[in-house]
Length: 138
Figure 1 (cartoon, one colour):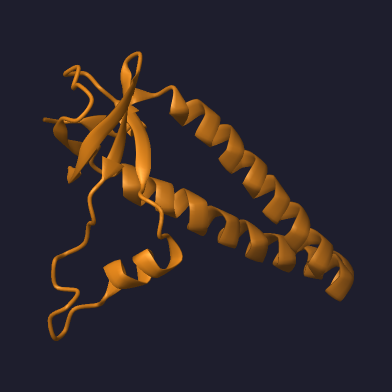
Figure 2 (figure 1 turned 60 degrees about the horizontal axis):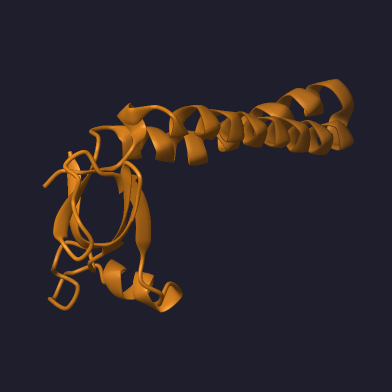
């Protein structure tokens, strides 16, 4: 289970809007630290807020820990990056075998578009599935 701290800033029925604290391993300023948190701040200066399940009925202003179910991040990353990349290569190889270079381009674009549509459909389905939803743990 991955979790991070934040503060509840608004409530929306069974959900809470949580402004997340700065995250990272805590070694950004140390020698050997990756500095990933600093890079994230450079590209995203606005506070990060997320709408998460609120089973414990936290109130506005309360400090909370937000958890993401085990494996949800890995599955999401694989689906968002791996599946379109695999579809792109499969379409290019298949199109190339059928119609040369032009077929490779058309096949790659067609399979990439199909993978994006599949991801969109999967996102809609998983939005309603509590197994993939971040939630307030404490």
